[in-house]
Picture 1 (cartoon, rainbow, N blue to C red):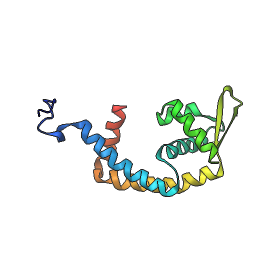
Picture 2: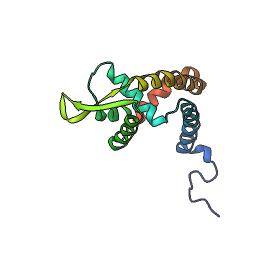
Picture 3: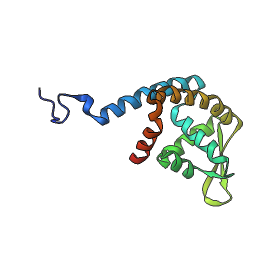
Picture 4: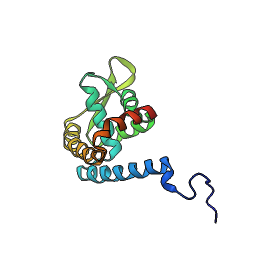
Length: 147
């Protein structure tokens, strides 16, 4: 059987996409496993952490602003927010600044979950990306260029 790629048929390690997804999967598996110990998923962590961050400078954070900063689909964020609201991590209310949007606010339970999970995720990042040593800033610059 002939593999249909002329470019990578003899060297899969030459595929940037394959190497990228393998590295991402290794990082993500570690994150997912550790966040499971906290009782939240990675997408829930991202939404709550972005909400917490944005709440520093805006009393009325919208789901749309969370989706934009996290670069997530608005419908996905809406579903995650709905689930987190049911579990008592956050609340949605009418936004006094924009009646078309909901304001999302992290409750004490959500703040506690982020406070518990964030050091764990930061340590995973430190360990995982620490392998880049002095090249980590360059790596971030390359990732920004891809965005």
